[in-house]
Image 1 (cartoon, helix red, strand yellow):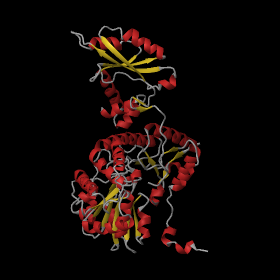
Image 2 (image 1 turned 135 degrees about the horizontal axis):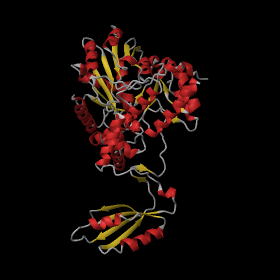
Image 3 (image 1 turned 60 degrees about the horizontal axis):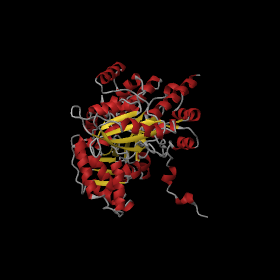
Image 4 (image 1 turned 120 degrees about the vertical axis):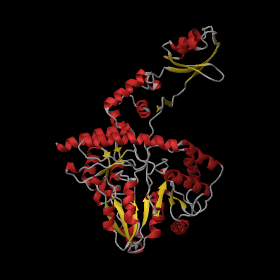
Length: 390
Length: 159
């Protein structure tokens, strides 16, 4: 009989499944669950984009595209980055269209990290960086961002973790799950630390369109940081296009041309219909983003106020669509809080420690939900907290 | 102001305090802004959006196109105002295109609406012709989807 244990890569066997899964499995078996767990927009993709995809299918454009993506799309992405960040990237050699931001992250990490390399990851953060870095033999060094610093990365924290073996920094801002952003001044301090090193940076800017009151700033905009920064961005969050699976990488040519090899062998090319539709999104949907951003903003303010009133301290996030309230005052761990909340009140949120050990004591609450939905959730959480107090 | 109007159009029953939080201003400021919008005649009133078919399955909603001879003194104004004064009339609009005035009418039944058109509208001297279209089904009204709430089909994936 075949021995699967001996077949499988030991590293993947040792990779832990995400901590979010457990609550999702619980929620799926229950009725009347109010979810605040999902990390994708509640809006539909703008109609013009959907219509464009229909047109493209009708015209039978169902072939592969160039490995790095349709040149027209790469040109639009280049123009978009230029309009947002004032940086120029050559559509021919410095941009790859990927299968979501996820593939972009995977490509970038795998093409840089070798066994023994140290990878600095700001945590709490999205769950995929660590397992991918570990799979290629990297040594993950967590940099714990703190509530008192509004979950921003500070220069001192960064400096203290850098060694001769540090090869890569993952800078995920606007941040999932905390909603933190890095201002230009914050990034200038980071740039000061990095400038004489040979460390590359993956700047995961998938939430760049969703900042409130402050425009997104990229590390690539600071001094000569562009030479070491790989920008990961995409269409999922900004244009409500999660299911289209489309993102992109933008970075210096010497890095991008190597990453293209892996993309070419592993993926071939990103979904063609999605690529055509994305051109439309970049050209015509600025107003749609603005509308969604305004709606998120009202919900964000509502939730921050509601949690603070309930005595669950919640810093005011300036990006993404999550709030990250502290639940330490309840005396429960994040896991206990989430489990009890879903069992007794049918409200699903995600424990902060799913995003790194330092997220313990917090919960991630998504506001990719309507105001009326959020109000009902807050009503139930209020009841829950009252019952906890007894 | 734009944001306030957007929120009120979404749900006019939100309290001043709730609106204040969502706008990041004080409740006093919200009260002032609303008072100004009302005084300036920008906010004309607050009403519930009713699924008429659900509320009264017999009720009938009709759109009536009118061709009207403009009057020498008042143009369309006087006729439009006269039509607007009927309780059955939900809206009156002067239109570009192949007809002049569009009237929305709600009646208890088809007969009611028919009588209204034949006795009240068609009899106005300036009205040359009418075309009545009965609404079969409403899907969206005042920006609100009224035909069935859409289910949240997002999967529980890690993102």
